Image (cartoon, rainbow, N blue to C red):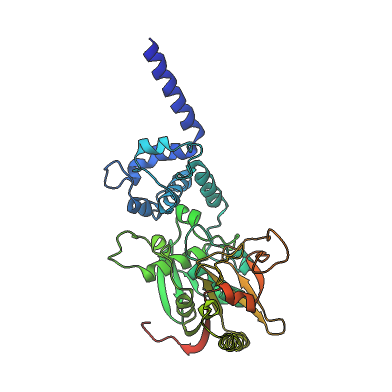
Length: 376
């Protein structure tokens, strides 16, 4: 009798957890469909393929997007993802930072799916402030796109056109066109958001993934998984614009062996290049390596490695307007703003003296007027 009561209590407790967790409800309803080889364990590839599948919508999409975030986060130490082990992960065990909060990830994904607009492009809402990086490491392609969006939203809109039911043509450079499917619910939960201006940014991310995909990379079978691998913002700036770039490294400013006179000459060269590129209406982007100065200090609020767009350079004040693809706000923990305390950021924009920026920045990429050679 006692054993029966104990089993009944355990069953009741399990049902209570299940009832309070929409994530687990979705897992139980769709696990077999996600588990393509039917071995009872969800692999990374199976999760990536399920994220890319349009058959999973709403809660199913939110759940698989949550699992995708969990398995691709190297901070987590996950067991083999069986249906049973997933039940043991919910709710998240208290005090264990090696495991994800899958219920929280599910809620976040659900909100993004519900809020997303599925039109291709709404030019009336298209602006730099509408673009924000999602839960992928693809700042390398969003920073150049942000710079272009800042220059001319219509130029961005012209790069996208419908291509039959459920498909979109995305043009990179002067004439490179990629045909991609509209983003699935799960992809929209993970990819960039556009504040109601459409799914154009997700189509762009998928086009970049398609362009960079390699058949031998079996661990990244989908466009979304490929774009997550990261890349060079400068290279992507060249591909997006169809023009060659010129690079300027900031590493000499962290090299104590290089004479100050040589550093000042390099700084003047960067100033001239910024002024000339901006005057010609061309784009500039760049990024951090670790975001640290020569003495190992990382300004609060700075991300690294991370790609940024340079929106403006004021030669009179020697100040750069930097844009972070996350499009977020940041308030330094102390005053005054600068290398020690960080820089205020509003919708991704921060004003930073060039003499300070070069101390922790990785380098700049400047769009030129030279056409990119075919096949590059």
